[in-house]
Image (cartoon, rainbow, N blue to C red; front, top):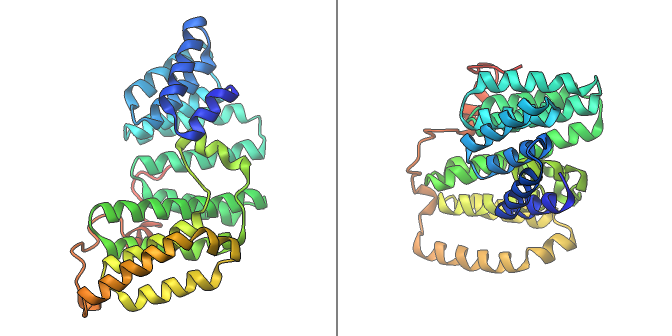
Length: 293
């Protein structure tokens, strides 16, 4: 993937990335790399059918690591998990036994499974790799991804008006990512932003802020104060400066909520963990349907 296309993917400018790759394909219809890369872009756009078409075309021209990766991602998006598993297995042929490539492929496969709603399986795989891997960078990336995915699950719960479930996911993200409070995310992890749109910047800050909002929406005011105090205590001066505008706005929102809902902690959550609650994920770690290896 050339630099211009890559930067467009990182910015989230997917129409530009698609247009540039289409121009490459028009100029050379046998450019299997461009088909594979456009498949990734189409997957980012959730256009799974066209993503699979491009991946299949790439592989018909020349089998490659990126061709099988893009096919696996597209198949996961179409919820065809077993076929995706076969594509990722074939991708491993091109690893040449290199541990870094194998770990990279394992992580890609895990995130792709998340898009197929295999949430418990994704978390299980990340935890197992982190525990088994001796490479510190891979272990760190597993932890970062777990934080990121908990935030995505929390966002989903908020969209479903399930603030208690959301708060639990954001709390898991905060606890898992405590080491991120004073750590910068290495630019080498940008590959996952290109492939999946994963923005790993400010994860710890985001998880803490969203936890405060979720607890407030759940009416759990006592825990809101604890969460806000924790974030303040753990933040360095740079983080505090970055959060200043948010903090002022949140304090105003909190003040309004206290005045309007005096017994907020007794307010029930309308969502009773019907979907991917944290307890569901943890209990399912050892009992997952369609386990992927």
